[in-house]
Each structure stands twice: as C-alpha cells, then as structure tokens.
Length: 89
Picture 1 (tube, one colour):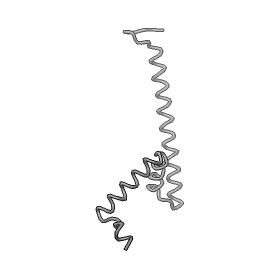
Picture 2 (spheres, one colour):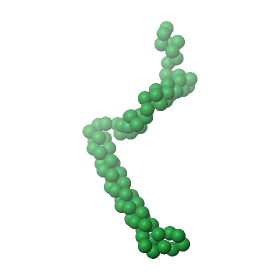
Picture 3 (tube, one colour):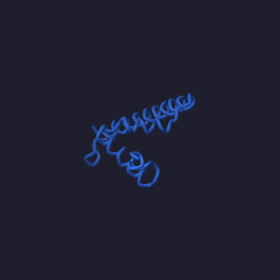
Picture 4 (tube, helix red, strand yellow):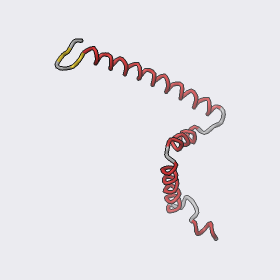
C-alpha cells in the first residue's frame, strides 16, 4: 500500500471508485424514477400530488398530523379554509 503524507493511496482510490459507481447508479435510478412519473402522468395522475404523498408517507404519523394541523390552521387564518365556527353554524 502506497502512503503519501499519511494517506493510503490504494484505499483512497477504492473509496473514490466506489463513490463514482454509486453516483452512476444514482443517476440511472433518477432516470428510471422520471420514467415512472412520466408514465403515471400519461395515465392521468397528478405527479405533484404523488410526490407530496410520498413525502407524507416517509414521515412519522405524529409529525404528519402536526404538519397537517399547522397547514389547516394557517389556511383558516389566511381565509383559504372555513373557520371552525363557520362549520358549526
């Protein structure tokens, strides 16, 4: 193993090569994901809504509820949703 200034050249090269392969795989996967979204869109699905659902599904239920509660509150404050008093009347 060649060392240059306390750096193992072979090990560094191995890391770089692994990372390069992973970056290439990531690029390939991104292309496949784009294709799936294009297919869904061609079949009439709203891809923005699908992406939002995917983000929500990654969240913990408690965090998702908290976010939905805050969004609902902000919408009511800004007049984008009826107030609770309006719904009860």
